[in-house]
Amino acid sequence: DKDYLIAPSILSADFAKLGQEVDNMLEAGADVVHFDVMDNHYVPNLTIGPMVCKALRDHGVTAPIDVHLMVSPVDAAIQDFIDAGASYITFHPEATNHIDRSLQLIKNGGCKAGLVFNPATSIDYCEFVKDKLDIILLMSVNPGFGGQAFIPATLDKAREARKFIDDNGLDCRLEIDGGVKVDNIKEVAEAGVNMMVAGSAILKEPRTKESYKETIDAMRE
Ligand code: DX5
Ligand code: ZN
Image (cartoon, rainbow, N blue to C red; front, side):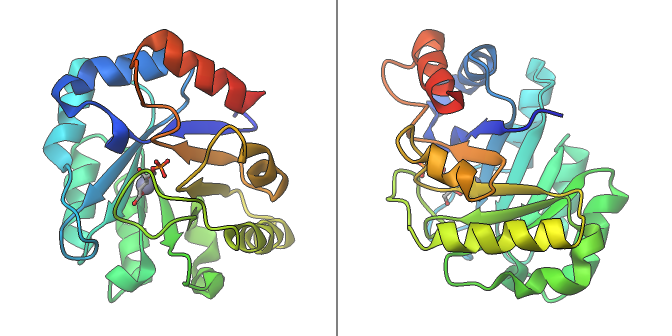
């Protein structure tokens, strides 16, 4: 396992060329494909679903696909993404009535499971399901759109989550999502995060493998 994983969010990809975009970002050194699912109900935007995840697998993508569910309810979508080849599936605890059951559903499907916390949501939700968590994902923007500014209070929350993971000896990634750029990724890493999502910072013009590599290399540095 790498110490730090970089997960470009395909929300900022050119959707008309999605297969090529994902190939380019992986060849540029991305570790994970971050896949944002929005339902125009839990969040005010509408994106992509399990058919697109399956299409990426059929296209030959073998890298982990990190499905971030911004949908409510979650259980039917979880099953669809298990069948579509997801690797990690995370959901927002307030989007389901039965958090433990939804986590168990993900694990039963052979995927890694995690909870996602909005900027104002407490990570207390982790306490009684800690043994089922492979990922804790902290939103550093309000979910729904790419290209928003990083909310600095997330850094304190990251330190709190890092302490929770370490104090409990959990084998759990700490992931952050929203507004991560070359110029703040060091602070994010120092706060204990080891899986960084970045959409607009990586997937931007001129949209070449070389330009993606330049940003990913700078982030690793
Ligand atoms: C926001 C999504 C993010 C988003 C990140 O709801 O969950 O994954 O694409 O985009 P940037 O990195 O541009 O903030
Ligand atoms: Zn996301």
